[in-house]
Every structure is written in C-alpha cells, then in structure tokens.
Image (cartoon, rainbow, N blue to C red; front, side, top):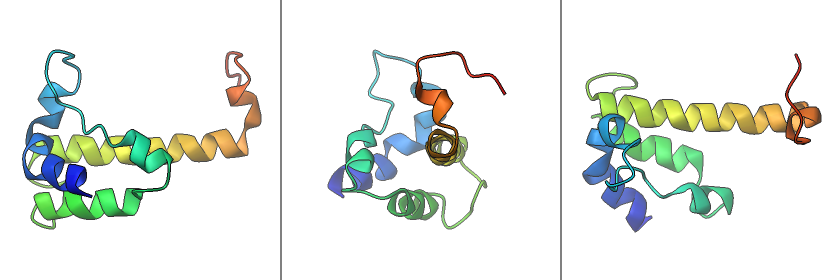
Length: 94
C-alpha cells in the first residue's frame, strides 16, 4: 500500500510522459502486487481518483493514462479467460 501511496503522491502526475522512458522510474511497479492479489485494481483506481481530486478522466493526463492502463489490463485479463486460444503462443485470429 505504501508503494501505491508513494506513486500516487508524485510519479502518477508524470506517468504519461515517463512510462516509456527506461532511464526514468516512471512506472508504478505495482504489477507484481496486483498479480498476486496483494493489491486490487479497485484500490489502485481509488488512489488514482484521489490523486485526481475525484475526477475520472479529468484534469491530469498522467492520472488519466494510468487509469486507462489499469482498465486495459483488466480487459485483457478477461479476454484471456474467455478466449483461451489467445494464450497458446499463436497469432490471435478473430
């Protein structure tokens, strides 16, 4: 939870600019905690909303980008469950 709080207090505001730059610590580094169930996407979304003063997709572009990434992550988790052929190391054919 402290890592989430630290990220949302500072780095989330520049996430959109720094996430693709390996030399910078621009990513949240929360994926292992989310994957293990230690941290939920709901908790992450709540923290992001607090960083954005309660506005979903308002104000800060870094917060918006991180929320979008969380949503895409959840979407693809559901795709993998519903369409097992996606995860068989073969190109996906719709």
